[in-house]
Length: 311
Ligand code: ADP
Image (tube, rainbow, N blue to C red; front, top):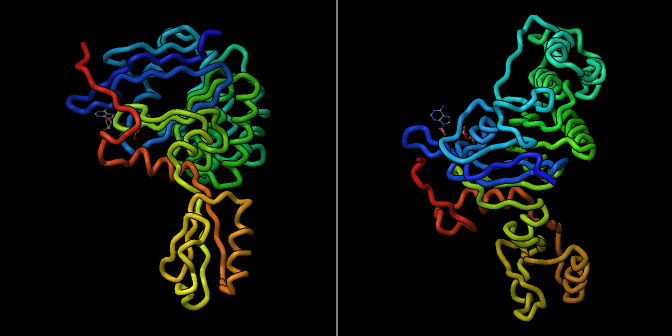
């Protein structure tokens, strides 16, 4: 099947600044793909090439086979990072205005309910909280029931419960065949809703994969930290059967599957070593982000793009 979104060799420079360094990416129909990466990585520039507001210097972008400028606007929904509708309109009026731009929009009440704004829909936009305003903005991007949704930081400012509600909505849209490309700085969000995550750094996708694959490849090891009572270092034997060390009054065991925690604690009990607390942590996408995106030495990144001059 033709990809829903195809990005081939896209480059964009602003003077000396390379915003996109020859980027390739294909999204399958119904896929949710989340771009993460440090500020200035090129996320918004990439989003803008998809919406046709930035023209690449080289390379090609197509959405459902059409270039961004030529795509049937009934099929594309866009939420820019900075979007401020008139403050003296109500949420309902704003969504209704956008509904009026399309031939076959969703019912405005359904959209308001979907973004959790049914109750406050008749308040002026200016009088809504930042998170409520952002929900209305998300509603304007959904109102044409698009095939492809491009969302630049959709949940910024939305409280955790509201964000969770939007994740459910976006997952439902993805499961229903809507292709979603979004950006976020919220690693929990990226992990919760994405089929694939791409880490963008200096205009290149330096790692792409399912959240689980990225965590497996770059997240590092799980870790058990047991705070010990007193200083039992002298009877923590060298032959302790796990990858472990003793530091600042705690026993640290790395790369320990959750089901082995009880075995470690039983071993401590057998040796009469008392402990006051136990914490086990698994690597998350946050660890992946810190490991991959913030590498100062670009040579150590898993992939590296060269940046030819755009012709
Ligand atoms: P992100 O969204 O990941 O923070 P951006 O796409 O906004 O990154 O920016 C990528 C790089 O391009 C940054 O170095 C930024 O300063 C630069 N840039 C973005 N837009 C412009 C512009 N209109 N003029 C000049 N430089 C820009």
